[in-house]
Structures are given as C-alpha cells and as structure tokens.
Amino acid sequence: MRRSLDKADLAIVGRLSRDARVSNREIAEQLGVSEGTVRGRIKRMEEEKLIRITAVTNIDRFKDAALAYIWIEVERSGQIREVAAQLAGVSELGFVGVMLGRADILAITMVRNAEHLAEFVHQRISVIKGVRGTRSTLGVNFVKHDYRMARIVS
Amino acid sequence: MINPTPSARVVPIDLDETDQAIIGLLRQDGRMPYRAIARALDVAENTVRARVRRMEESDTMRVVAVTDIEAAGYSMLLAIGVQVEGRPPEQVARELATVAEVFSVSVVVGAQDIEILVVAQDQAALNELIRDKLGAIPGVRRLTPALALDVLKNQPDWVPFHAA
Image (cartoon, rainbow over all chains, first blue to last red; front, side):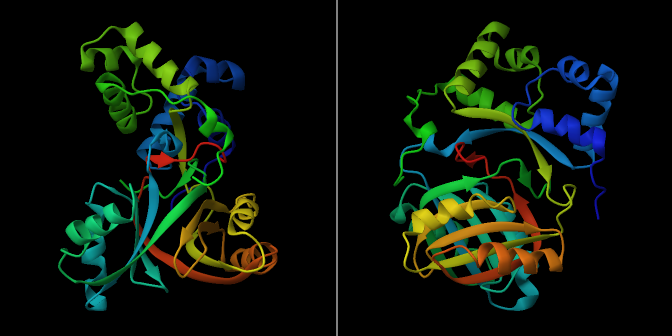
C-alpha cells in the first residue's frame, strides 16, 4: 500500500490539480509555508508516485476521436500477466488492467473510427502471443474523465 | 460528439510542430521550467510562454497534477458496463457523471449503452455505491462490473475537459 497524502500534501495538490504551472512561490504564499517546503513536498510526492504532473489534451480538439474499450481474453490464465505487460508497452493504449470478470484484460485507447479500431486491434493486439480473442466497444460520446485521478504506475 | 459541450464551442486552434513538441515535454514533466523547454527546443523563452498560454486559454491543453487512486484513499477500481432502458443513454450518462466516485463516463455502442470507470474505498463503500448511487439512477437497468486486479498502465493523455 502506498501512503495516503497528508493535509499539507492535499493542499498543495489541490492548488496544482487544475493548473500545475503555478510557481512554488505562489503556492507557498497562498498556503503560508516556505517555498522550500512546497518544492520538497512536490518532489517527494512525485518520487513516491503519489502524484504525476503532466500535460493533458482536450479530446474535443481532435477531429474524429472516439474512445475504444478492448476486452481481451488470453489462451491460458497463466499467460494473463505476460500478455498484460506486453499490452502496457503499446504506446497508443491509455489504460491496461488485469480484470476479474467480463474478460481477462481491459485495454482502452483512442481511435478515429470503427475502421481504425478494427485495424488497430488486428495489427497491434491480436498479434500478441497468448491473445485468444477480443471484443471491442466503440464510444460515441466521451462524457467525463476526471484527470485528477489515475493509477500511477511508471 | 452528440452534444456539443461548452468547451467544444471554443474555436479550435491549429497546433504546429513547436506546440506539439512543448506538449511532448510537458507530458514527461509538467513542472519543466519555461527556460529549460526553450533550450531543449531552441526557441525563445517568451515563445514557449506564449504558446503554453495560447494552448491553455483555448482549452486545448492543461498541465495538471494527477493523484494516484490509492494515495487518494481508494483501493478498488472497476469498469462497469451500464444497460439503459426507458431513458436516453446520454441523459443517464450525464447523471452518472455527477457521482464523484465515477471518474470516467462514455456512451458506447454495443451490448452495453454506457461504460464507466469507478473507484471505491473498500467493499462496503463499493456495495453502497452500486446499490444506492448507481443502481438508483432512473434509466439504469443493469450494471455489469469487472474489478481491476492489477492496473499496469493508466495514463490517458486525452480527456474531455468540460466535466472534470
């Protein structure tokens, strides 16, 4: 288990969650702590993989962008971990999880359309050794994604 | 997109190579100083500042802090398929989006009408979430959940900005 963020961490993350380009000095002034404290805590939270500070782009800005859920079944249960690790290396995938129920693995990506999805699954997913079959679902409207929350892995 | 959202009505901007390169660097390290970005791309620091501001103001890019689900106190992540009846899936999706534990909502085509990603603190909280919050929303006919045993990757760089 990772440690939970304490009060001071949460105050800093709260300030960073919507605009992380704000300076350490500005955060320090707002919270009434030293600039060094802010810098040190941000560094520690990043090192412990409790937070990740990153650029996200707005999916509404891309023409023909649809979210695709790809449910994957593997040949043998013993291969799940290995197949999932290979999938995690596929750069186009934004989410890879080993699941209990519905399928062995869930992978999520962004595609242009149904044709692009079919091509992507055929060329990048089905070719992975141990993949027995896939079922894909194409999104027609991406209503919400709270980018302030994720499983931080690498 | 079926329903244009407020942010979708903002005039899109064209991104050139410099913009793309800045986004690439900020994806790796969102706190990278403007000066370091300028040096890496061999452009003026003011150019970098102006480009970042333009992309932020046009709602094209944001630099944000993402908190780990476990560090935020949640130990469970589930992908739940939602079948809808007697109500447009779009409406049900918007209502699901108002639930704090539901962090991703997509209207989809196929066996399910909506796919959502949810987090829960523990099994009791999950039970309450499914029974009292999600299951009680009008139009929700059936919830088909799958529990994530291990998340190997979770870094969607593309998200809708309007509901977050």
